[in-house]
Image (tube, rainbow over all chains, first blue to last red; front, side):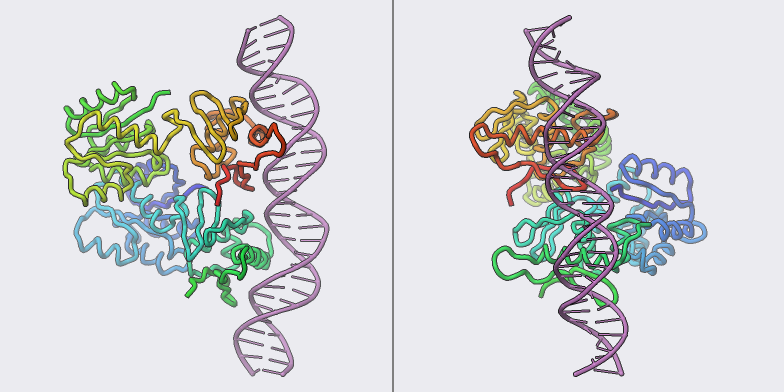
Length: 233
Length: 233
DNA sequence: CTTGATTGTTTCAAAATTATGACAAATCTG
DNA sequence: CAGATTTGTCATAATTTTGAAACAATCAAG
């Protein structure tokens, strides 16, 4: 369950240095030497976070960021921009384009690592082991426990992971294929209708109420598309 | 099995004074002169507790604390902040960033030592040799003794250490690999299934009741992941 | 209100994972 | 060193989880 970082910088020395530090910090790192390559790699490998140097040949960090935001698959991946300039205008431009954080050079590798963690904590709290709350539901990643309305709920591994996925972006619709990819992993031969079955099991477990009436259904079926968490009224 | 403290303060005199007192109190102390160094040392040596001066060159105590919290490896290490100012806002900022306690200057070395002990007692009772209680279970860390429901229980060394590990963060799931790492140590060639066997032995020992019915099982198996202490709802 | 498409559920055998008894090797104790 | 205890592995049993198929229910549009 390692966190994957993509880092793009045209200066080999800097790239190597930062990669090394990120790896030391326990991340799995892939490198790009220019903007175009970064974009390609991002699409191919779908990292958990992307670090872009502002100035790069071929395609600037800004351009890459804009492009990433335009692609459905990548537009949720958090981005950190690295910049030599320190002008306020740049910063806002960076954030405007959809970057999640902005670091001005010079900075220490330590700082970069800290920022990466901070951004991930903000955007993907589950990856960092924080408790996820949604309506009257609580999910404890470290304990692999789910509670609804204070009541403990038992879930099989697959159901737990599906719920985790849905809770990563509450409200977002996940297609059956996406669910298969994230929960089963790539290249696994399984019917997509199997997802339905697990969703059914998940619903049954979540909505079942020991005393009396069932809880309202927290999962929304989007006909023709997939499933999502539903925020109750 | 001495407790290791990292203390960071940019004023050499103060640093020396506090270090001396902490050492007198039986702690093993390492020193940092600025924030960056503190962060580095923390990652390298993984102390049991960290004391940070609020104002430091290079990186303030706040920044260091934030960074520590962002790093998986260090985010469980308790932190005490030292501050010259006494404003309420600072205090809450300090605690917001994830500090465990906050001391306003001027303070006596005695007070610092007392606070260190208090924080450790709160966060890592086992380190202080305190008795760990969990449900009707009691574990005496330095005596290597466990009792359930008042009855003395005999555990082999491995079983004792596994139980200690599970009790460090009750409810948290520990993978077989984590258990192997913590109990056997790194680079030991042992089947992961061996952990199952020891868990089985641990359970048998814990749940066996001389008079009549067995105790309820205190250990939770998390299919596909590992083991954890079973917490009440 | 019918129809075709999509989704929900139940059931069941297979697959995967975990529990545990038995035993030899290793380690400790006196 | 002898005897006792602790360890690690294996084989087998017990359990849980999974995936697919079959059928029921629901939906969206004519």
